[in-house]
Image 1 (spheres, rainbow, N blue to C red):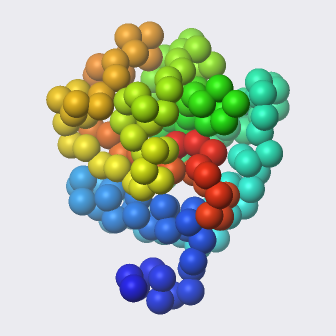
Image 2 (image 1 turned 90 degrees about the vertical axis):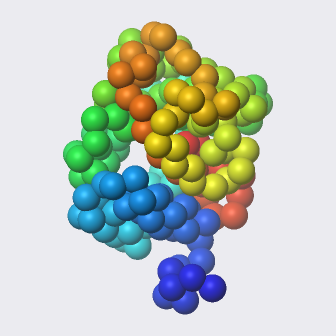
Image 3 (image 1 turned 45 degrees about the vertical axis):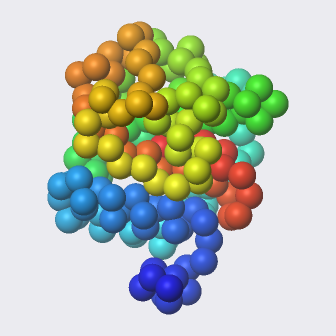
Length: 171
């Protein structure tokens, strides 16, 4: 068992945040950024996941603002240029971009992919965090020109889930 499991934190959401923190460190993110992810998992991770799990259909204006605030807070805390949230629609078996900092805001709600497409799909398929130093060269990379993502090369994806249930999105 990892030291995280020994600490008594058994939820999948918490574990995903901890894995994300470890991957962030591996990719050279500041130590403070990884510590922020760990703290989010310890103090706020489950609340965030529960709030996101109630989403169905098209997000309302208030929900869009909340999701924008979440990604902006994470981007600021991690000192990264991009942070995006893709939500999973189980009826359509698709992931849709619902909030972003750093990508083109016009692509929110328009960019969508099947779960067997892209690195984001790979995260939700596996239920595991994924770090890729050169995302563009990865065989699962899927390019969406409307996002302006070609400026960025490093990818870190973390599944957002409610306990041990199927993931509800990817951050």
